[in-house]
Length: 396
Ligand SMILES: Cc1ncc(COP(=O)(O)O)c(C=O)c1O
Image (tube, rainbow, N blue to C red; front, side, top):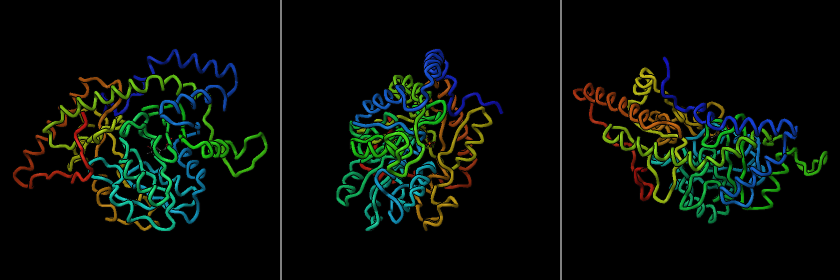
């Protein structure tokens, strides 16, 4: 099947930047300074300013950003980290790489981010950190998370890998917790042409530790005072990311406009649309709808040449390596129900209004057909969310 409207279109973003990127890459290659050079230093400073933090440390990818954040806080064997299971597996990999134990809380059924009402019941004497994920481009409900962390003397590590430029009550993703971790995986709102990541923090000591750890535990060549690893951002990626960072706000605005078009066009279609928390700026890394006949809808869209995704079809706690932590089937019912019903529609800055309306029209037609068929035999679909996050509204 020929995909006419893909989930993401990276070529459309690359075309207008091609000449500038080629020039920047030629400069890097001519200089042959490939690591920890002027582009990395400049990008770290620019990204720190963008996020409103004092320090940003370029690293090799988002998984490493999370891993180094945990290492910098000395979180390790015997420690527990509270997180969610509706995330990309890397969140869990980072926790387990340091030897800590992931402790899951369920998600809010409306925003799909950490259910803040469950956190305190999961705290034990071994808990060291809360690791919320700013999923799909929207920040978790950070104020209560930060308040609980203060009360129990815990660190907060923001997984901001999907939330470059997202805001929570005027504060940028990655600027609120003890540390923030970003990924520049190619399909992210800010994506490299290879791998890349960033750790953000306000704390100079923590920043220094991350810098040392990402470069083999070394501040001076061949002197390794701590047990580190190779986790550096490379200059070619830093050069691309500097160019793209200048476009990020405009791209995010266009994503928001596209989400608004979807929201209007999908009204009354019998699918749940994304919800933006009051006072938050969702940057729609993904535009995720929800419907009980998700798989059939996905097949229908595929047959019509429309690409979709599922983020994520199997929650982390049910993936084989993580079952040993004791969260079996049914332990996170909201997460598990969402995994069966969520569907990511095409979303990127260059998506046109015409394309969005076409996707929405196909969903409408499919839903109408389904309803006609189901009317005689099935009970009507009930709304899924219980809306216990305060003050929600449909994103505009
Ligand atoms: C929520 C989340 N956490 C962590 C990561 C890991 O980032 P990376 O792929 O750059 O290692 C990603 C992205 O891939 C992500 O979406």
